[in-house]
Length: 105
Ligand SMILES: N[C@@H](CCC(=O)N[C@@H](CS)C(=O)NCC(=O)O)C(=O)O
Image (cartoon, rainbow, N blue to C red; front, side, top):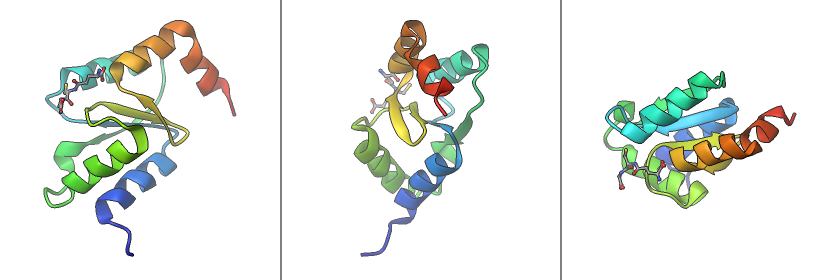
């Protein structure tokens, strides 16, 4: 079976970027997540789903759901592992789990 283009877009993006964020431009939780990453000085790559071709975006969303179990945005991946969305990012930042993950090498 051939790899679906949307699935490859997701897996290539999270493989190429240690901290990878999937977002949409109008999503308040996405702005909060990216704002938090900026405030704490974490560099990240952002893929806005608004820039994904319309015939591919359903595939992208399906792949994100497969990898994270979530269908909402934002979705944050670190080292190709799902961290969750904004709530989970904020929680991980408060507990120190985020820093522990980022300090890992
Ligand atoms: N608990 C999630 C909430 C994210 C959320 O509700 N995102 C909205 C956009 S801002 C969404 O994806 N809504 C579409 C849906 O629920 O299917 C988080 O903290 O990231």
